[in-house]
Image 1 (spheres, rainbow, N blue to C red):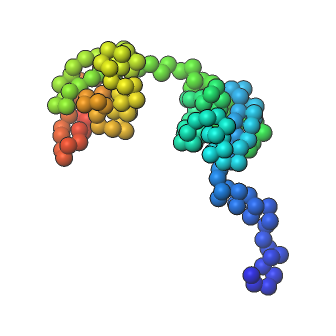
Image 2: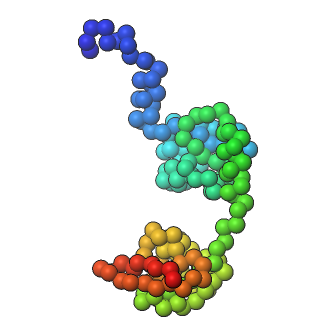
Image 3: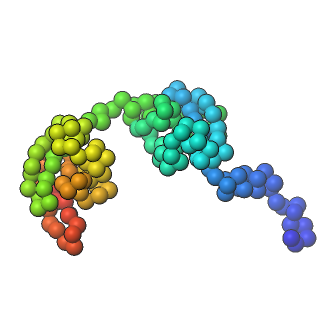
Length: 167
């Protein structure tokens, strides 16, 4: 360390930086925004709630899902802002059921369902597969193409990937 350099180091900032490098501080909040618990890392939070670390990390950025009935955020704020709590509560009660249409691999419409749950029950295709295809994370779900709504769709296939064109 150069002479006089120690005089300019912010020890609190260095400790916080070291803490963040070890893992993100995670906090668990009630639906009203009151902090319930703080964890040194997402791994610790996951162990406490008995879920996978990825689930805790995903919930820390979502405003429409709860994990074990709680809101999760990075950091250790004593409470969530009133605006954030109101936004989360609005998103939680917003209508999530959306109609879904099933297509075969050449783009022919097979069936229409009022919700993903109904589609899963009637076809035997897992909800996650349908949702992944409908939301664009995967091209197909269990060998079918799934799209939200009733719109007529046409597909063009290039290199084994379907491109969706809504007419």
